[in-house]
Image 1 (cartoon, rainbow, N blue to C red):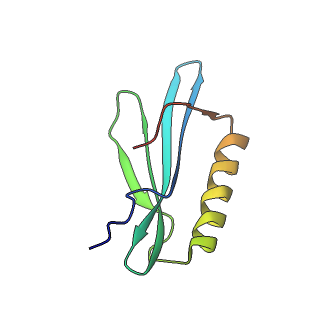
Image 2 (cartoon, rainbow, N blue to C red):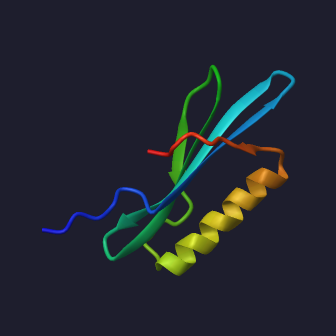
Length: 87
């Protein structure tokens, strides 16, 4: 039995400005015969929201494009990378 890695690629971002203190996490994960892009975010003091940007498994190339576009959008909105290891 070959075990697949739980995460292929991940990013953790944070946003702090005034009273806003938020975190955003995204990852490419293996699923069935492909990959999905998952996300989780929260504003400190509120509930965690989780979801997927790819409802069905896609190729690694497609998942990477979705992931890269998602991270670029968050960085453009003022989020900053968190250099802690993703899990």
